[in-house]
Image (cartoon, rainbow, N blue to C red; front, top):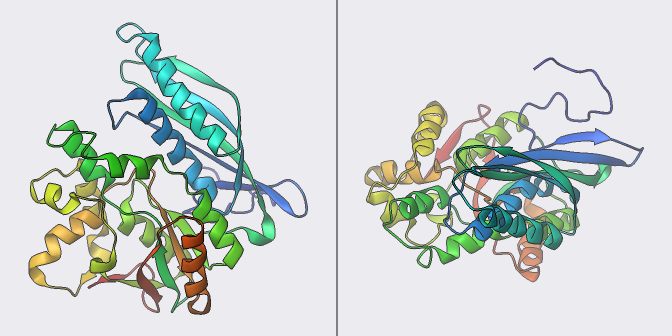
Length: 317
């Protein structure tokens, strides 16, 4: 897209921003993002909740507070009852209310395949804004949700498991990252991004390129949702995971047990829906951040650290 020299577009030169940041006063800026996708669960209300939580995630990753949301929905009115669309919108609305934002309208399009999400506007104090480009060597990497949503969603579509079996995953996708975001603002961290479709490895890679740094990951410490390894071993792998891994292979060094490499790399490349925040925390604030997360009901897991080295290089043990 054409470059802009607007000085109020604060992250105009950052290529891997989670959201757009636009200054509206000396101390505050708008945080703007949009996201929508096709259903990953059968229940329309639950789908609406997940899609809305996912859309808010980019605002939370920047340390922002959501203000308003606009519905974006595509729906096959010729072959699906409008009650289904109503349930999707109600799920999204309830999550908007939970986020403390205002639903201010939206737009609908007739489409053979349902799609739903939000355009979200938030606000952030400029001096507290967090981006993905501030990670420093020796910072510790904390992940605030388990991974594996793409693999479990593939197993659901294949009817290998039921939504009851996937309850923990579904609850995780519905959960807002508000508490994790508030915790990092309270403690002060170096950098943050949310983990979504490009996978844990892909979004870490973007953080490392932005920060001109490398990283080490301990696979055994990466939290996984229940049954992820089992479903991956059965071949319940979304196509996006293979594409993510193909892109990331040149930047990955595996130093763990050889027999675990293939399974671990495909899981780490799994595209996430409404994933957690990946936060780079200075060593002297790491313990405090984990404590504050716990106080706010969030289970943060330390999975690695930032290192010196070629920008984007990831060593996995």
